[in-house]
Image (cartoon, rainbow, N blue to C red):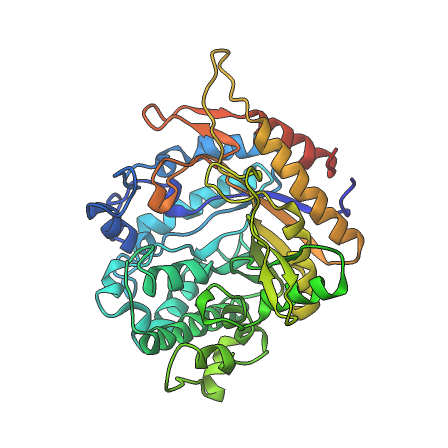
Amino acid sequence: MQFPSGFLWGVASSSYQIEGAWNEAGKGPSIWDAYTHAQGNIKDGSTGDVACDHFHRYREDVGLIHQLGARAYRFSLSWPRIMPTGKGQLNAAGLDFYERLVDALLAKDIRPWPTLFHWDYPQALQDEAGWLHPDAPKWFAEYSEQVVARLGDRVNHWFTLNEPQVFYWSGHAQAGQAPGLRLPMDQWMVGLKNVLRAHGLSARALKAAGDHHVSYAPVGICGYPATDSPADIEAARQYTFGAETAARGGWIQRPYVDPVLGLGWPEDWEAMHVEKPVGVTDAELDEMQGPLDSIGLNFYSAPAIRAGADGQPEEVPVPPGFPRTAFSWPVTPAGLGWLVRFHHERYGLPIYITENGLASMDWVSEDGAVHDPNRIDFTRRYLRSLHQAIVEGVDVRGYFHWSVMDNFEWCEGYLQRFGLIHVDYQTQVRTIKDSGRWYRQVCDQNSVI
């Protein structure tokens, strides 16, 4: 399966999950520092204080990324490392670190694709009401302006926000992520507007600084049709973008993507969750619509959907013994193909798969290698599904494997391993897994066998 010429093969990570150095070189605390330091929030009781020690080992890690054959590296910038209080005073040492990282990547001919925000919100801003504060969008825009002013001469591809469904819905409505809040839905809606306005103002700041490619990386929420019947395909489409049930809460796509791409505010969805609609003004909608050159989609798993007796979408139960990852997520490669079909159909923008991978049971074998055939099989199946969608005309420009290395997996701590590179957290020894060597072949040949 040959991919189109120029297809971009990359790997991905995020700052809190790999950097460590949580209180070094002038960095301020983030909400994840506070959340992990409180007992009971992380399954194995761990923190990201050290993680993969990437802050000190970034040169070694860039060399390993080069060995994987990746042409691009999607990493995130730590807002409190750059602006310790989230606004105002810059931390020169923080910007210096990212400047050195960018230069090291470019020296290896690896294109840097930084994400401005991957969940590690400055605790100082959270103490001022965080995303609920009316100035929250301006804070993020100011941070974006400072970053692009420093790195924009060498970096021209950017992502604004990563997975607002997780950091804002799970973290602020379900208490499932940092900062662990359960906001009333009317307050939560106000914050959501600020999150989307922050994206839009950030995108405009990046564009104002030069000829920059700007993207956005929500969760790739979708359903895939249980059969090829037109009824099931339409049901899967409705499931992906509809608002048919309040039970899904914030785990639908429209509130996070439609407003930023000019399709308006989902009033029907909002009405399911609040008695008195919060609504948006024309000025707020305009702010949300920052210019985008592409959309990034993170994807791991999706439910099979069929048309019910009333024609409405319903999930097909996962049968006993169905393949699952170590995270217990069903293995559903067909979902990736339908994800990009549905999103290209609705939004019309070029697509990058910004995260895709699996948690697996990996360890260093007696021969010194890490054998992870399940990761190779998983990735091959998902890439075949993606390739078929491309053959059918969907404009997919690149793929970033999650993740470049094993890391701190949020509320799971170090219990889940997603990396193409194994990390021994006690010694910090890195070992490229069999999947990493396989991925090198994919990148070099621009094809999947």
